[in-house]
Image 1 (cartoon, rainbow, N blue to C red):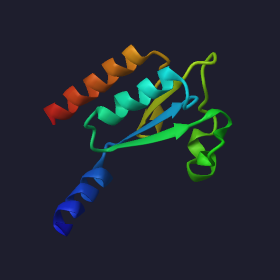
Image 2: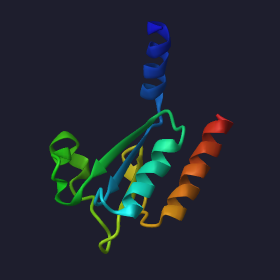
Image 3: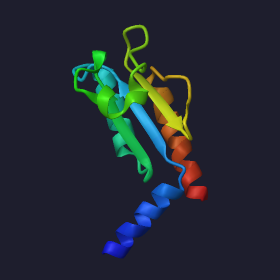
Image 4: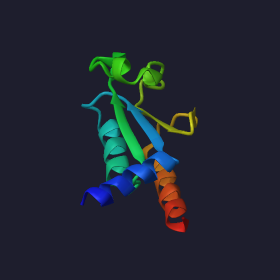
Amino acid sequence: MAYTQFLVGVDFAAGPSQEIVIAGDEEDEATRAMVECVRRAFLPNKVLLFRPPGGRCGIDDVAPFVKNMALIGGKAATYWCERFACQAPITDVEKLQKLVAREKRLLALM
C-alpha cells in the first residue's frame, strides 16, 4: 500500500497539477455548483482551494497566491491555474463544466 501511495506522490511531483481556486460565498448556489463540479471530476493532480469573500478563513496565510482572487462583479469565480499561470476567471458554471470535461479528455489521452 505504501508503494502505491509513493507512486501517487511521484505522479503529482512530475505534474502537471492544477490549482483551482473558487472565490465565492459558501451560501451562494453558483458557488456550491462550481465546487461540486470540480469535486466530482476525477482529476488526480488537482488542488482545490475555496476562498470566501475577504479571505475570512485564513486561506491567504496558507496559500498567499490566492490573495487577489475574488468575486467578479459580485459573482462566484473559478481561477484555474497550472504551471504557475492562471486562466481568465470563470463565472459561469456551464463554462466551468466544459473546462472540466476538456481536462478529463486530455487526461484520458495520457
